[in-house]
Image (tube, rainbow, N blue to C red; front, side):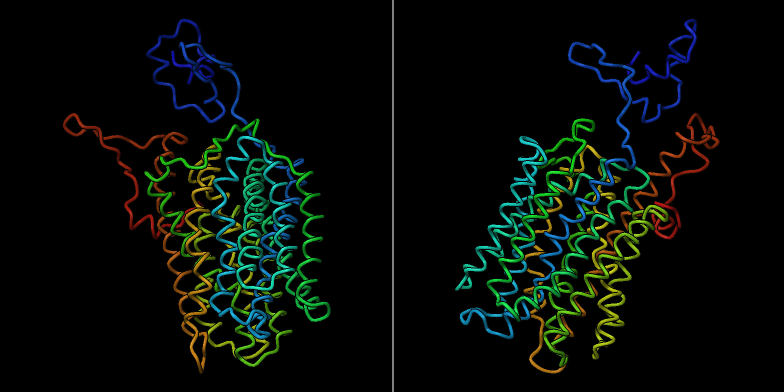
Length: 484
């Protein structure tokens, strides 16, 4: 008898035949725990699959990841303020607007590009080693940027090196929250990712004030000290559950590319990032383009990040209630919609503030839900590899998105119109990918339903057994409401 059914077989009396055992219903997850070693011996046949505690010390980890996000992605979100300063003050005379756009793009794309290396470091040396590496790289990058006098030095410091530090901190922390939670996974992840919004709000306002009062160099140095202290403290306190879960920690699992559902997940991320980066970095300069001041532009950026800080936990909460894929698809589409109907017509300070807050609550839906949805699509054990591949795929859109946005600017009139339309369409394309992924998930639920419920009746037609309730066709799954 296969060890797969060893737990279920203990319920049977000794005089039952093997034929009866063969007709047992598929076991639950807790019964799929026995492992067969080389040589055919069973290993710990009654050991149950690890179940996350759904809280406990996990909430400490949520707080730690929250502040790590605030001092990585949140700090990077303030680049819109730096970009507006570079463009208005002509800080590096030899640099063009595209050069500045690539500095912001590099910081994100390098964070994603370094993810396979960070995953390997995590596998060999542990999560804490990965986090501490990121702490020191980020500090060095900001200190180095404070001494930059040429644009290529800014590329290396605020662009590449900062991206590497952010990448190590991100990869080391992004998979921790799903390990601690089950039914509260999305809300916990939403709270943790909300740190990037709070950090973006704080540093968008602080960076502009420090630049005005103390200059660009000291702005970088003060940010370096703050980021180092907070990230170091959180890296020491945070804990993973890798020993219990034993994730694959492979930088690449090429088997994932054979799954169409994984391609849909990648498409959602790819198109989302093409729109997200334009929104994140362009709003302060857009504010200046419609006649507002640099200080008002920094407030617009801060309000957008405030929206992210408040909105992401809400998105996470309703993801657990209404379905993670449902919520991700709807919020992504809604973000594209308001870019068309609000941003294009936002010509005053008040309307732009309203748009910044509203779009901030949903623009980063990808970052709020990628880990929980990735766990659903690929499973917890394959999640590190799935995320690592996802980050690599996102290198291209994050590198060139802001450059595309600035290149689409016109010389007169509504100079950001083409960039606004581009952003809206990218979010709509991302929503379509999530819509198709939702149809796949409904099909999976339909296939698993007979194992958990009474099977539908079966007809015998000429010796062929046909289910009376076949799996839902594609069009029906696209339009069907179901919590997934």
